[in-house]
Image 1: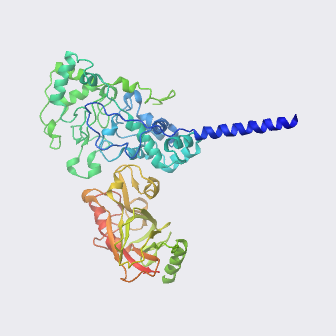
Image 2: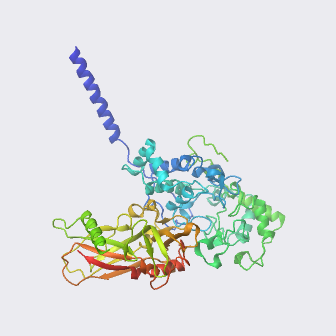
Length: 351
Length: 231
């Protein structure tokens, strides 16, 4: 009897071991995901997922990193603190964003979507690849304030991260390259292409009369820089905001060319309704005031103003409102409410 | 001085692999000097302009290393005067009449996203806000530096258009069969200050941007490298 019990226990142990072995071997390989380019859109200038294969596991790891405040020096600031999903990944109603130790950024946090089409990043275009962009907020003393060593140390200590990195990249190991690639899989996947404008283009709906008139006004006055379908031509331009209190000269900081003074990246107009305040420094709080800036606020005699703005834009009040209706038709709530992009758990925004 | 360098060379050689069975290999060792002295922590050096300085960091990239007419290898090495200053590459038994290499890395690496190994941003040779690798980094303190705390920082980088700081170096070797397995290359920092262009710490204490000044500094790389000896 006693011997039987022993055999039974041994058999039990063997069974458990075998089961665990099976479990380990069954760890599924990363599942490829296809990044679909919306119909009628241009191909991205470079395919960011060629050398960084987009997989479900890579995307999920990137998402976890994006929402994880522990990555910052004081554990309070995550990527998502300044790039809030409900504001199309900009900082809602903040001209400037908050960094560690009650610091402030000195530029307005840009909204994040359709990044796969970008040819450069930041308002001055200083960053040339989506994968290396994240180094900036992670290391900037007025953003997440960490060191790369510090971030990696925290990740390596966490067993769930060790597992998720292995799931995403097959072999064990947490490195800066893997972390940056995973983040790029998440941010590069943020696709916003389902606004009323997109539905109209696909023939699913018709614009209202006001939207239609606004669309024509947009094509006349705005499309020179905010070109369809991404609503930015990715160029750097001086739109007449002038030198702010940070003496921010924009693109010139990067190129050292005086001809680049006060030039900033043309932002997309998509989801513009959701991402106030506006401009590189958030100095214009309301979308109506932005239109007012273009209608009456620009000193068109300025020598360094963008040539396309030298001719005054004439809009009647009614036309301004029509243009506004068109801009609202660029709002994609299926993007901001997409659970795949939003936080998995309740996320507390502290600012 | 001479004994010191010889001793240093012996230590480095013994730590690198020698000729392996069947496959010929060549050790390349960079001997970093300034003011006729080996570069060491806390030592004082003087440049041609009489400026006395201490060195805290000295790192540079070496890539596309080529022996004679062989094809360059794909490896990229980060030479650190206070760390790993050598590497081993495969070599043929044929006559090697020269060694050539690039200071810095090909522009492709500057625009292709997150990299690993010697190009990992952890190595502190990457500019995040202005994407690209630093080609050559020298940091220290100098009495003549007007920068805060008398800091001296020469971060030479820039990879695009007329801002390129990568430079190809070709050093002739004796045109005879290679009976040696180690090439010692001297990197003489004196020539950084006094080369094609003259750089003084007082005038350029901190150089951390791509542009004209960085290109000038890079032009001086060509005079900084020479064959110290083969062994």
